[in-house]
Structure formats: C-alpha cells, structure tokens
Image (cartoon, rainbow over the protein chains, first blue to last red):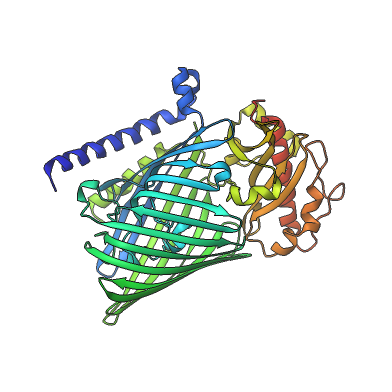
Length: 335
Length: 195
C-alpha cells in the first residue's frame, strides 16, 4: 500500500479517537449546543448521537483465554427536513475494533427519503441488502449471520435504492466490491446486490441475488482474494410469541465452482431479561464446514447486556471448541 | 493473563466509565413507517420526526398523572412523528404517531398509536411482542377499547377498560404504555409545534 495512504489512514485514526474523546468529554454538558450560536443550534437540531462498547472474552482450543475490546463505536445521525417531513438523512459511524488495532467507518451514508419513505436513495458505506443481513445486523452479537462464511463481505461502498409497495419491499445496490477497504484498493471490482422481500408482520421472507467480482475480507474465513460470485439466497424470519426463528439458504458459483450454505438462528425468551440463543450453520464448498452453538443473552439493565455462547466448529478433519462471553453497553440520544 | 490483557480490560472499563448515562436502550422506534402509516392515517403524505427533551419538572408532572415512576430510559427524551397531509394545497398536520415499549413478561411490547388533532386515539397496533398470549393481546376486542380515549380519560381496568384474563400482566403493560404516550403527548406537545 502506498505510504501516502498509510499516512492518511493514520491521520484518520487519530482524528477518530480525538473526536470520540472530545464528544464523550463534552457530552454530559450537551446543552451547550442549544445555548450557543444559531449555526450550532441548527446543526445540533435532530442530531442523534449513539455509541457503545463491546468487550469480549474468547477461548479457543488453539489459544488460551483472550480478553478483547472487540469494538467501540460512535454514530452521528442528522435528519434534515423540508415542509412535508424528514427528507435528508446523514449517518456517520466510526468503529474502533480489535482493541484499537482497526479504526474504520461502519455505516456512513447520505440518504434521500422520498415521500412517506416509499422510495429512498442512499450513497455511501452501508450493509449489503442480501438475505437476513437486510434487516438483522449481528455485528455486535455473539450469534452472527453467515456472510463471513458465505459472501466474504458485509459492508460495501456504493449507491443503493430501496423502498416499499404494500407489504413488499425492494432493494437494489451497486457497489465497489471491496468491502471496508479504502477506495485506493479498488481493483476493477463491482457488485450488484438485490433483494425482494415480503413483510407480513410476524412473517418476513425475501429472495436476494449477489453478482460481481468481490475482494473478500481477510478477516473472514474465505480469506482475502478477488472472487467472481453469482449467488441467490432466500431468507425467512418468524416471530411467534417468545420464539424468533431466522433462516437463510443460498447457493451459487464462486469462480465457476459451486457452493451452498444454510443458516438457522433460533432465540427463545424465558423472561423479559433472559433469552436463549442457538445457531446452526452449514457451508459447502470443496468440503463441508458446520457450526453449532448455544448460549444466552441477559439484560443487566441501564444499557448493559451480558451474552455468552459455546460453539462447535467442524469440518471433515477436525472438531474445534470455542467459547465467547461478551459485555456490551450502548446509548443513544439527541443533542 | 498478560499485562497487555490487563491493560485492555482496564481500557474498556475506562471507556465505559467515560460514556454518557443513562442509556436509552429500551426506547422504541416506529418500524416500517411507510408500510404501516396507512393503518393509522390513510391520508398521510409524509411524516416529520420531532424529539423533545424531558426535564425534571416534566417528568414529575408525567409521573403524577400516570401514578408510577418512569423508567430511566424514558426520562431523557421522547420522539413523536408529526403526520403531514395536504389541506387546501398546503402541508398541514393531520395528527401524531407515537411509539413506546412497555415491559412484558417476555420482553418489550412495542406499541404504536395514532392521535388525531383533538388528542384522541385514532388507531393502535402492537408492533412487536414476544408474549405467549399475543393473539389475545393483538385482538381487535382488546385494542379497539383504546380508540377514542384521550389523556383526560381514566384508562383503568374496571373503569373504562377491560383486562385480558389470559394475560393480565401483558394487558397492564399495554394499558400503562398507552397512558404514558397520551400524557407524553399532552405534556410535550405534538403536531410540529413546540408546547
């Protein structure tokens, strides 16, 4: 990577930490914004700040217990209105991951909301509208959706159009296909993602397509490589009293080789604060990988949540055990 | 555990200690407004989000009227959705949508109400609930009793409302949450105009 990019990244990282510290320091006295100049007042109106901390304790057979500040994030969201309603939405989120080893943008975009939100256009860095990812972000959960194993990408930069008609929703995204990397790592990649969904209240279902040349993330199991992908997925969510069941299946081609995958996430609420979580995932390429896990979520109160999970990962050669515990805190409010 | 690990844990504790409190983790948002708005306001053309800050005085007045304490997360702020329609060729407020989560036995019960310009409930639905008695809780028989009520009504089981024998705790959560929203709207204003 060019030295200039490294310097830019370092500057961005330092700036992000600086902004986070300043905002957290000033935040208790956030009333300042209202009592100062009209410009500050205008900018702070409808400005929502949210953030959180994700601390984890991980044990794998390959290494001993490892505590980690898996992520710390800060999001600023500002809505600009016209006389009829909310119109422009700006969202900026910075994440400090892996105990400050990685500073990067999460969902950061500019969105134009059409009348009633029946159609919207979004440009920036966003979660791809594929399968369960479309409306279930597991970034800060222990039991996660399957994009790491199946797509090798979760967020990308580009342009997205989405909206509703009746109980149907649609989403089309054209993006760079390089994930969370900087633009200078673009290598003539491209990605077209679409999803057509149906929302029947307690039932949701969708069909998605994923086509392009994608540079997969080195953090995911596929490793870093440019991969031609053509995939189709279906997703299904059912809320039935204390049960929430989410399922996803997909299949397609990766560099002309067939692959397939499936995911089942089942949550069951035992009380208003305690929930059981389970997961089963299967990915088939040249060999079959499976993951099964069970754990719990316990709401401690005042924004604090404790989660834990035990996982078995298996392929044709070995079975690996893994345990994760998470202490999570978040907040959200308007200035 | 290495000294580096201890440093990481210490850093996390420090960051959390610096973070603002209280959190608003239980605050409910209005999901899929475009899809669901027609349930409450078929004439709607758009909506405008309005957020109002709570003050100790407002919290005190609200608590007196609902007869119980607000949750910590409810003492910070509250968002309304001012529904816009076109009247005589110009945008005008047609009412307000409010969304709030009540505490059910198995998690949050997210309730959405639409209020007309006379401050009466025009429509109500349960957006999300994990209660076992969801069918009864979401039934027209139960929810329709709230239509036409305002902040001036008692909203008490045995007076102007009937409970659900199969799910009295969940019914009480819905009743209290609706009452809270009506009082919030009365105390904080709506319709795009500051109180």
